[in-house]
Length: 106
Image 1 (cartoon, rainbow, N blue to C red):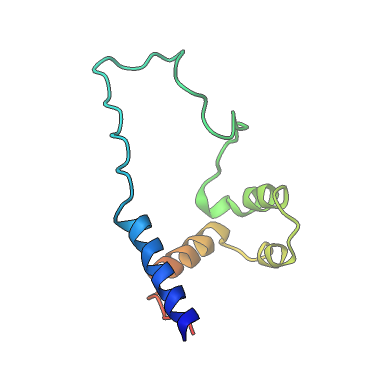
Image 2: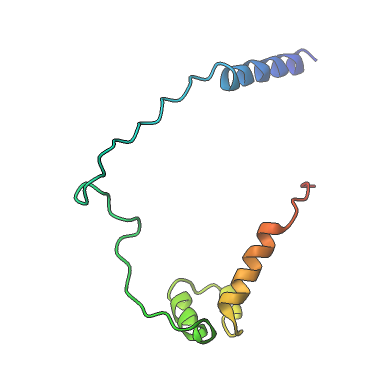
C-alpha cells in the first residue's frame, strides 16, 4: 500500500514538472521583409527527382505499376497492382481511412 502511494505521488510530481513547470518555448524567429535569395535557400528534401511525363488518369495504371514495383516487393502491394484504376482506388482508401470514426481501443 505504501509503495502504491509513493508511486502515485512520484507520478503526480513528474506530471507537474512536465506539464506545469515546463519552460516556455523560445519565440519563433520573425521573418525579415527581404525575400530570401535563391542561393541561401535549402535544397528540397529527397533531392532532385526524375522528370516523368504523366499520362491521363485513365491511362496511368502502367506508370503506377512501374513506379511502385521500383519501391517495394511487398506481397500485399504486389497483389494490389494487377487491379485497374490504381490511383482512384488508392485515393478512395486514403479518404475512407481519414473519414473513419475513431474507435476506442480495447
